[in-house]
Length: 397
Image (cartoon, rainbow, N blue to C red; front, top):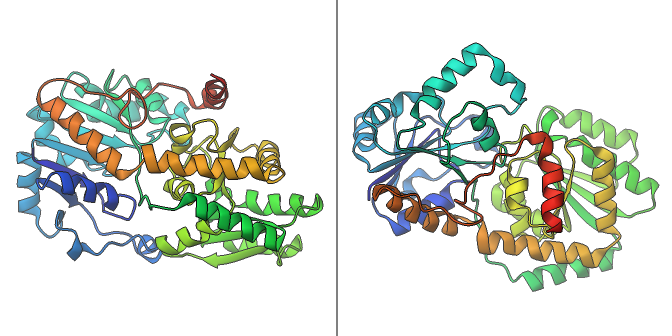
């Protein structure tokens, strides 16, 4: 079965999945439609294109790529705003599987825009009865598309699948425990771009409260961005320079090493975070995550005992969850253990590729083979404002 994945560019979050697809199907290709932005290359997101046998660049091999898209049995399409790449397939009613993050990240009230609704109808709703399916890269995607009446009974859980490292989790957690006991402090990590909707200031404000409450700690801030100078000023003003370390942008493998030496991951992004692959990485590194319920990854990866969650942008609840975890090291360690196995056993590129291959084979035979839970299970329609309570109730079941 010839499968082609069309997206803006390939990066370290997609390569493990694409490698797994190619390993199981040599007729898998990835078509990159544009060069990667310089900022993301500096962040270490670039790929060695020569090592990826399945990678083709549309802007260098246009004729070949157009032919590939047209002749494939199934096209996976996501991360591209330009619909022209799949217009002919849609007209010919050939199978297309879309991958999408939220379309109303900044608020579902935006769906009232007449111009926006017309565009959503052209791109999505008018194909509701065609062989077009949606893989939801985040827990709020289904709710957004439900508002425009697109993909009824054809929306499934998906995400991003960065490298899943095989760890000796018992040894890793033991090393974290030994370091924690030797230093007499807990180590926290925050990683990402320093921009407003990722709320890196929560980490600094937490540091201020921890110091005031007599709890020893170290916070490693990995990344950079528009808020960097303001954050560093906050640290100086709050006299936290001996507690908070800024290490700048690091390559993905370096970020993982910081995570492997950290006890708790602070994941503070709000609803503007479509997925948040940094959460996959920290969980695979045995961190106990404290998460805003806003990022798309959180509700999909949440299993009750593998992370702490708090209502979107609620600092008091965030700090409450954080201190409860710090004051209960056994719980923290068990949470890191559970977090690791969520990624290792259920949410990784290998599982995603195997399930997708079966799903696509089913589509070619005229049937939808969805899973009961996890990757490629039906995506529930839950409004953003109701998600936190839904997750709380689910964890009690």
